[in-house]
Amino acid sequence: MTTVAKLSLETGNITYKRSIEVTEAFLYAYDPEQDRRTPILLSKHGANGQTYADGADNVGLTNLQTQDKALFPMGYKEAEISFSVIVLGNSMKPNTTDNSEVSRAYREISEAYADVGGFQVLAELYAWNIANAKFAWRNRYISDEARVEVSFDGVKLTFDPLLLSHENPEGFDAMAAALIEGDKDDLTDFIEGLSEALAGGKFTFDVIWRASVKPGQQLYPSQLYLCDEEKKKNEDKKENYSKVLSSQPYYAHGKELRHATMSSEKLNNAIRTIDHWHGVAGYGAIAVNAFGGVKEDSAVLRKTKTSFFAIRKNPEKLLAGIRDAETVSDIPDDAHFFMANLVRGGVYGKKNASRTEAAAEKKKADEEKKKEAAAAKKAAADAKKEAAA
View 1 (cartoon, rainbow, N blue to C red):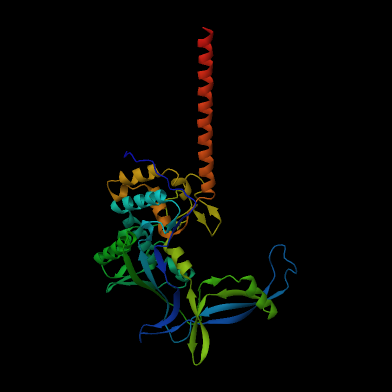
View 2 (view 1 turned 180 degrees about the vertical axis):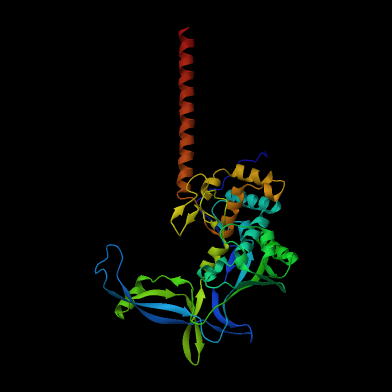
């Protein structure tokens, strides 16, 4: 095993910018025969429901609600979700830090990972979540006929997302088999574009998901959560606004309408759902995050020894594992997970790190004083013995 000089990855302030920047996604109705599209607009709908929650007051009584809905219009054949992505090499070095030595250690690990081709692994996983339309979320299940179009550098790839799992990564050959348009060379170019950008370059591409949909079908933009101020406005209007969907202003015939959208956070979450290294039975790939949290059932798959923060406590082992890898397949899973977190971006400072460091220094100084006092005491005792002799 490669011998690595002592490193530290812990300090009070360490942040990384996102390496994958995704735009908001817009929802459209598309007519392939005439190559025309129109925005999917949101509308308010009243619902006459019942109160039925366990322990609720007035169980069984009417519960009037106002909800946003996004319905597919007449005269069109396909639903569309479109967005753009910029991939950058922001994981190659910290955005901010309060310790230059710690910053150097992070750069050393990122550079070693890039040198052995580690970003190729992450790039293939991100490509998989684009090809399988994971980003469409609930919309993925409204049709049995769908396709994903990816355009970059004058090249167009089209996938059948229904041929790919969105639970477990299936690799390059499965993605190639799902191609409707484009070939293996084009797919290789796409993955290499992602990989090279993650390692310090820049790569942009556009994504369009389309699916055959019947008029009146409900579509699913992102759902927003009302802040206290918005809730107060609804109360003043005597509205029980139970569902607010994401939108951007759209102007037509002098009116401001609401164009349905999906949030960039939701899309990014789908693309980074690549952590299949957690090793917990019953779970497929989950969104990369420091403790392996699963929002759907509140599980935490990386509580202790396998969390991001636990892995970084032994930077020498992490770096040695990367440097010892002769091929990409030899890179330890912990290294892929660690780097995927840096690609994700975030705040990774250690709470009270300065206090911990000061306490360690004080402890070391106290131990030195004890040693000096013990040595002085022994010297005095030795001198006393010599005088008595």
